[in-house]
Image (cartoon, rainbow, N blue to C red; front, side, top):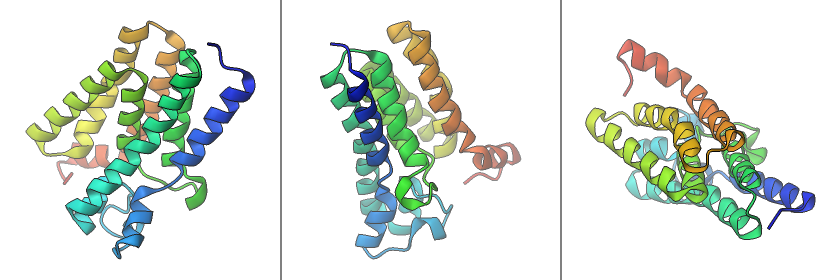
Length: 195
């Protein structure tokens, strides 16, 4: 089932607007914690919420960030079998998280949302990404390193799954943005000062 132009635009816009909802900021406010943009790493993501508000708040932040990546991709699968449209929908949700319309285009680094997009797009590629992230996080105890390694591998996994240079390129762009948003972490990793 090929997506019409209107369906494609609708999916991309919906994904971006849903992705723009910051679970970290909203949940921290509802639960009476400090705005994650003003404490810890100043990043509105689950890892920083864990630092400043504890496991419960971090868990719900993680769930929220995953759902806003997963829901649009599953909707796209339901409405079309065009994998370029599905990939663009997921990429749009990721962009919403990183550059949210509702919060001055200053969002998180996008790891949880990007993982959920990957799982929704091709579950096996997503499962491998999760396994890589968990392995590196367990061995090195550094969340940022685990994310950087996992998303360096993601484009190759996507190509292995569907052999499309277009969809691989979309996921490569998502991975590149995610890694670029970790540039401060990369500098600290090189200096040996990353937490």
